[in-house]
Image 1 (tube, rainbow, N blue to C red):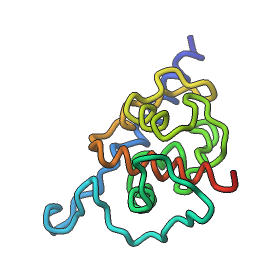
Image 2: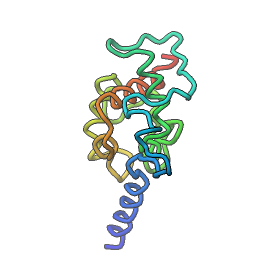
Image 3: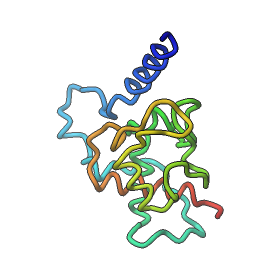
Image 4: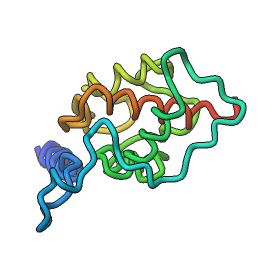
Length: 154
């Protein structure tokens, strides 16, 4: 019984950490300052795509938009700001090991949209779209970014 309560508390803490990816309110209305969800600011460094052939339909712009958006998304609560994973919460997404898909762009896209209801290595599930309201274009950008960083050096 106590084990179940501890697991429940841990799962609730993990879900609370995911928080939805929304920035706190500021004095300036968000509509005046925030980029649309599918087109984040591109202040992050571009991903080096040297030697990588992107999947059909994936562009360098999508990869870089996903890279720029990554630090602002709820994904970082479990996968870290560098996408290398957080022990006990979420696996490394930058290596060639995929636990819940085949690592293809479509596989990653589906995994983001559907979530991971029964993870293999951690207790808490990944909610569909990371528990946020990200649109399809942002899903594509994040999947493109994760595909690119996990296929470097292959």
